[in-house]
Image (cartoon, rainbow, N blue to C red; front, side):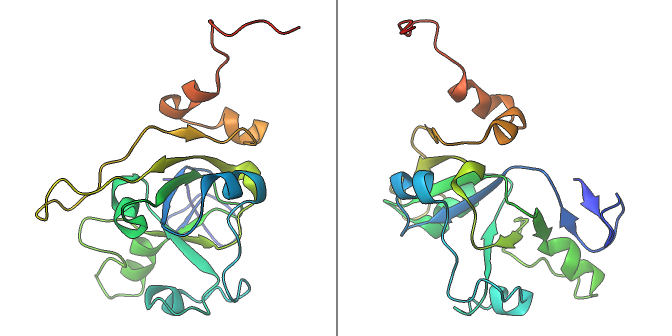
Length: 180
């Protein structure tokens, strides 16, 4: 998973996860704004307190994400979006952190691996967004996701690190006209 120690070396301690794609669900942010301005800081962007994050304290400067888009869709709810991003500063694996602190419990819901990352993220690290649809029935745990919307402002370094399933959205189409 790319876990790092406190000095940035690979190792099993401290739960830092670096350099990968995280999915964040949000019902209040529109893709056109996120693609232009990034994901805004929350009320206190300098407060990186895990306990505040886990209790949904509005003073937390952290946001949550997962390594798959399905769980964050529930947080975004119908009409919201799930953003695919590579957070500046990496993300903290809360399940590893809780395990190291001896609670034996995952930070998120059962079967979910939650990552916390700084709330403000610039536009160039957001790969794109999936629109969130309505649940097919009340027994369904997950909301269906619509077609991926690529961010035209994704940075070149981030684009190079995308997994193939998303990288294809940024490749020039063979059918596009040559405008040069």
